[in-house]
Length: 291
Image (cartoon, rainbow, N blue to C red):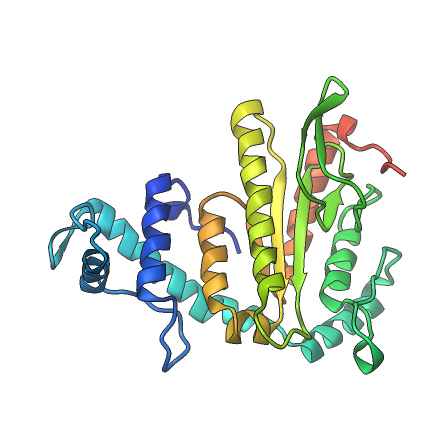
């Protein structure tokens, strides 16, 4: 899913309001499980209840300011895209295994196909990661790709490190040195609760996005950044509030695109072909991965 251009260039204080109001009013309806669209009156009352001003949001209780109009439009958009698009894209483990099997037969991959970290009868391929790896391999021609980086991502200037990200990512094209694209994969098919490990996965992507924003603003270097997530139960049944945070993060510009579940089949081939175009235009970036 790509960001909606209407909300992509909002100032930092816009997102302060989004986060504050989401916390005050809640992310979802308890009865229906759907993502909530707060009314203007709920927004005003929520802020005033904790002693915050609502003057920047509404002239009167039924008359939003221009800022308030955009804020309410964003809440409506966020709920609509999650309720009517994202939920339908998320797979369970059985659907992911079926898709993996189909693609494996079609693509005959040579790329790394990692196993999950489960035991006994749950031990199997990491289906979502394998799906992603196969789709990328099938669409990058003969270019290299690091499907399992064991090193920090580094951007260089005149052959010397310019920026090095704080943490390792899950994939990089073509390598972790001056990558064109990097990505994070969060598949949680066997997770029974939305625990701290899953929540940390969201914040790790946010950290990467903040570092890449600084690189882009101060050095003029743009590294494409993607987040790919799956498991219906973890993300939809238990983690809808974090899905809201992910949509916020996408529109804050900290990730270029978020791919939800089966959406990778449609979007990844297109994205990989764009990376190849950039690689052809910048052959100096395509070097053998560091050993």
